[in-house]
Length: 93
Image (cartoon, rainbow, N blue to C red):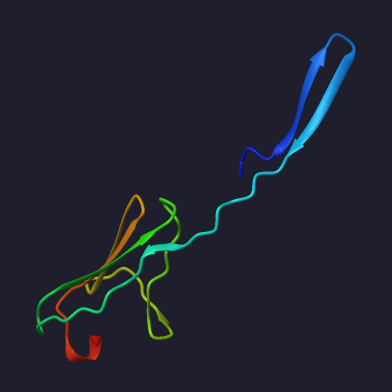
């Protein structure tokens, strides 16, 4: 997308121009989240794979946006986004 711009070619006093518009590929899930089970007090990792590396990810529980804390850790490696939930309790289901 950052390559979108007007380009020109000059030869002496002559010039030609063209506008390049780069259309971004849609951001999709290559692999969606899977249901998990965990024992109380353990940790669980949820992961999904995206179609683009480094895409911004927002993790939510129901309608609540999660934030990094002692309870929640977020990782992103290339196209894989992970949520680690520590010390799971029944209310985390």
